[in-house]
Image 1 (cartoon, rainbow, N blue to C red):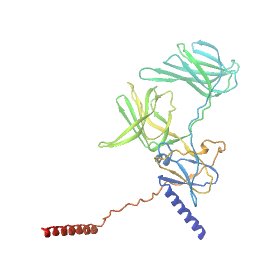
Image 2 (cartoon, rainbow, N blue to C red; image 1 turned 135 degrees about the vertical axis):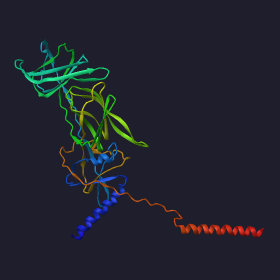
Image 3 (cartoon, rainbow, N blue to C red; image 1 turned 90 degrees about the vertical axis):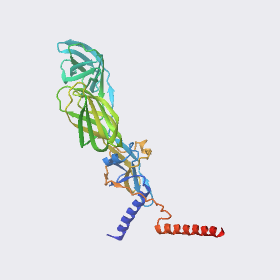
Image 4 (tube, helix red, strand yellow; image 1 turned 90 degrees about the horizontal axis):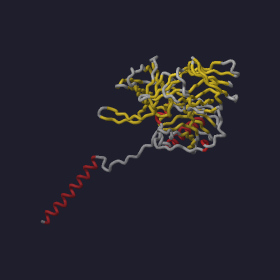
Length: 407
């Protein structure tokens, strides 16, 4: 290796160590590899969520040069769902009934597609099946939904409603709705719309421990994902084939205290809903950094459900970073007191590219801390201590002899 290259490597390592001496308020660093463009993306690894503060406000991108330490601006992008619903104008043409049930025919005067119909009834308790058909001329009908179940239960134990029809994108002028019911549905309102929501992008986390216990009329499910992670989705996989509608409460451990009997956990509520056999998609809730979850299922007087496993997911997180200078760049985190940075690119996004190349991250490393100079005690050596004591004894003895001589 040439002397020039050796000097460059030595200087690079030396400058990095000097710069990170200034960043001693952070705990961890990871090298950003392959910086070649002005804009890059970096998927956040699980290590960051486990060590960063609760608000993720201590994430920084620092670059080290020969003379200075630079801070690169970034945008934290969380791939949550984007809700977008556009209602479509329509009119009710007619209603009819026969032995099959009750029919409602709607006309949509526009050519816009739809994929959702929200039905609202005055009844609070029903269990009906739906058939939905579409037509351009009302002469020939095409089936969109068949035996689609809607349900409402309201009593002292449960308040559950599922009456929204979701179906593939359809573009018809006429829609015919059949509600299979022996009693006339009191249809209060129908909303026809195009649900243009963008689905979230999730990371699925392995559940390393799952404990299920029965406490009275409740089932308690404890779930551990092994480290603190951003959790926003939970699905309980139930083996039972019968209908069930059970109120649930989802909690997470927010703190723990060491007692004589072991650790005592503090739980916070994260979500309340209904575990239902009709809606098995799962539960979505606000993204929260947590490691241990607890699900409480209210069985009331019913037999406990056979819960086989649980699926836990969280939104994918990535940084969109702008690099303005050549430097050795590092992802830095682990500072409980750091405030969220304020960058111009968070306000002005017109110049940000849609697709930026991704960077690889090096292994997580602890940032070395400067050693504190500990002041040593004045008489650390026993020899000095005995010498001082001897001098004190001699002085006291001399004064004592003088006083005796005067008497």
